[in-house]
Amino acid sequence: MTTYSATRQRNLDIALLVLRLVLAAVFISHGYQKVFGYGFAGVTNSFTQMGVPLPAVTAPIISVLELAGGVALLFGAFSRIAGFLLACDMLGAMLLVHAKNGFSSPKGIESVLPNFTMALVIALVGAGAYSVDAMLSRRGAGTTSSAS
View 1: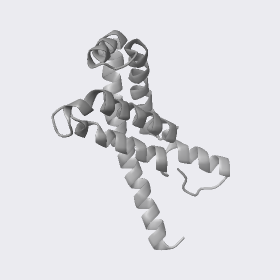
View 2: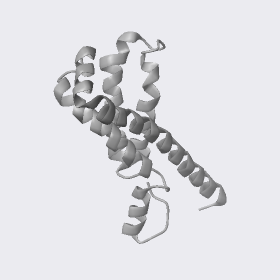
View 3: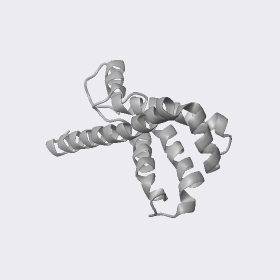
């Protein structure tokens, strides 16, 4: 690997770390609020008012997903799976809740589109070298090269 390629890879890994940490903070915060603040009953009531299908089922799933998915992203563990599931969560939020408010309004898709995009990037690219996923990959391969 040339110096340019190594620098570029290191920068990509740092960018993925920053992306993961920011996204983790958002999802941990929202998931914590849903699980320990509103509780499943409160989230179910909110989902009912917003017209989310099967609110009694989806509310606990989304609450736990956001909290656990955020923690997974924080450590870079199961990142592609967590990223995919959180991207699906945000796509659902955009389509079911925010789309009717347009793009830029205070409750429009603009507020969740970045979260969808960041989660999708993690799902597609992986967690980067500074993650549990990479550590386990290196251990399994018996090398010290970066993995995602």
